[in-house]
Length: 333
Image 1 (cartoon, rainbow, N blue to C red):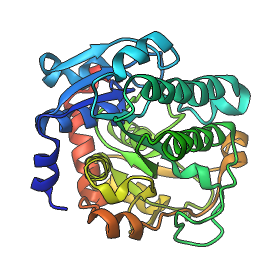
Image 2: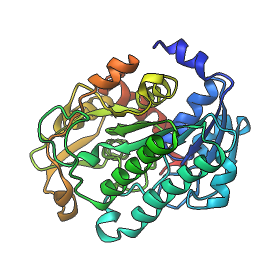
Image 3: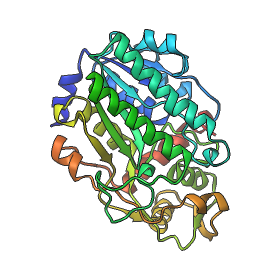
Image 4: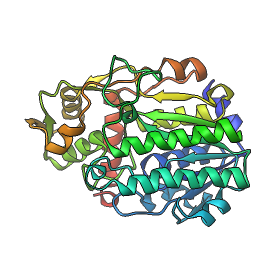
């Protein structure tokens, strides 16, 4: 599918984004508005999760915003009605927190997803649901690159709750006919992410350290491989899946087929952000407990179904990210 084709297919439709004030949700909202979609954003604005009014400043008068929680049955019943697409991004997203307190993950990611799907069943069974899970649902890679048929052995409650949410949505698809696409996202970076702490989003945290002139900490030997995906490419994958019939009922990896290690990431940032530096550091106990080793996604399935392909190199993506935060630092630091 071409760029113009998915824009044409989306024009004039209605979409709800849960977690739409956050990193991925706000970038998605901007793209949907640009495609002529009537966008409704639902966000509870829980402190520390990345919800930021500045994220949608340029489209504030073009979207409907509802400050509510996905666990609120009445709110979800109201908001899902008459929507063509529901992009479900809201949830507990701090995998470090889940090691010490599992209940927010269970409550938000599992109960919240069930509330949304039940609202669809009762009030809008024609809605199409696009869910964003995580590559962490796989756990450690059995073989590389990791395809969608790989076993799932999550290493934390956060990842388990994402897998449970995915299974709940699958049940509503299989049993109740509510069409869904289930995406497993890799390491996403770029503008509009929270930058106040390092508990998630390692690339963006490196960007903050680089801009501040602080030292980036490269854990271990720095040779662990990841697939770092720029946010614009991630959003494009979501939009192409939303309008492609072949994507529905599928679990699809959204990553990049050019893995890099953390040393290469740090060196790329040093090139992009003059004066930045890095050093080796030992793993913290929390990070070591959840570190899966090398991980990068096989994206041949989504490419074959939709034609989607990442288009942004790491250096270009980092340059755009650094430029955004330098210009808008006061809204994120």
